[in-house]
Image 1 (cartoon, rainbow, N blue to C red):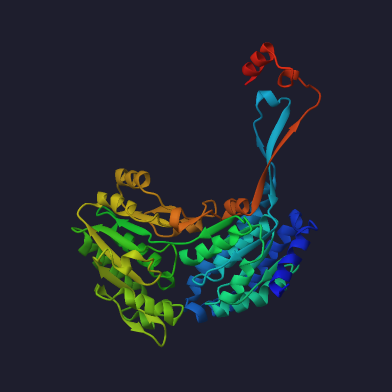
Image 2 (image 1 turned 135 degrees about the vertical axis):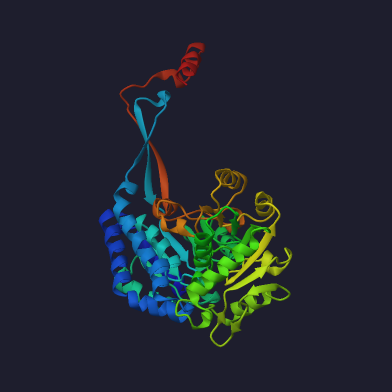
Length: 456
């Protein structure tokens, strides 16, 4: 038995002691995770800066502060989530009562992503802890500094009998996927998602896949142009566009495209200056391979803003592309970088058909004042999440679930949705023995049948 297999077996044995089911123990672990995050905030900021060039405020907003809020929300509501959830009981089963009893699944695996390497690994862990599970967490090896920091800190703050960190690349990920878990949550791309799902099938392990896709951003001509441009630029170029819910392309009427483009360029200049390479607030591409991939997307395209690259610093400028060919890699693949294609339509109502001809996205954005257009888009399209008149802000509400649909993922987490994902919601019925009417027992008769039909 290899070291990873031994770790998993040890966690499974510890779970069987029942320690992790205690509400006080779960609270203690969540508080320890909160203490770790607050105590080592600067270390986390430094690691994210080294891996992705993230500004401190961006790291706090999207990673550190996000996780702190998630932990506090779970601590506030944990007792309620753990309580039995009462249900009605049919007349045939009276006197009796029915309820749902949440219970932890056991030992789970969480595989994080490199683009938000702190938050996307530890936010699912918050849900796993809250639900009372043991867990193996696998940070992304591409964000090597953040991975090393988590591997160093987590055993110092959490119960190492219940939680383990596995670092490494393809070899270690392959080995950990060979083990039997009670649930797997993976955040990343579709290709690896298929590998995870195939490995999970060997053990009939349920999975939550948080993937991505091409999230559309519909901009109607009646929008508040200044606010719309600011929010598009913020949500697209945070983390240099390396965000799974970032707007992947814009849909706009051709009569409005020049005004929108000018407003976006103006906001880019206001946010990052005329040379974003010099801005302390603009991030970097994770590695040379992804930078080369993004460069290839610009071949043969009409670049109307940006496009500059510095391979030595892994920099790509915020880039706008006008009317890309719909069969080009830029419009066929998830961009996951600082390139924003602008697709022109004759009428904004055509956006529904445009979106529905493609795979279901993880997020959909709509900027409009029109209630009728809003209802048309909500009723006529499918997406993991929808945000109207803003970008990505739905992520800030822990009461909303986060997850994809179709090719953009399956399952969901955040808040109680995460607690439920890592729980088995056990159905329970309790009956009294004080009354036991014999209508359901043989020998059967017409009278018994009549009474059963009446009760039902």
